[in-house]
Image (cartoon, rainbow, N blue to C red; front, side, top):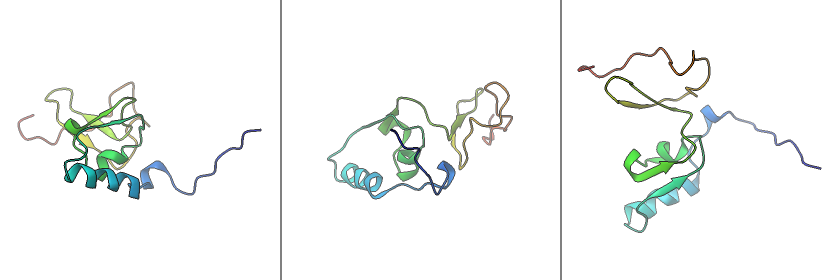
Length: 97
C-alpha cells in the first residue's frame, strides 16, 4: 500500500542523532577517517564533521558559499528555498571579500 510518513519536526529543527555522534566518536578515536553521505539534511556537518572529512553526494540544503571568495556557510535554514535562480542574496561575511 505504501503509507505516507508523518513528521513532527522540520529539517531545520532536526538535530544530530546518537548515530551521528557515534560516528564522531569513531573519528575522534582514529577508527573512522571519512564519511560519505547521501543525505541533504546537513546533520553530519552539524554533528562536527568538517568539509574535508566527508563527501555529501547529493549536496547539503543548508550549505551555501560565496561565489567571489569561496567562503562556506552552514545555515540553520534550508538555503534552497525562497531564492532567485541560484543566488540567495545574502552577503559574504569575510572582511577581505
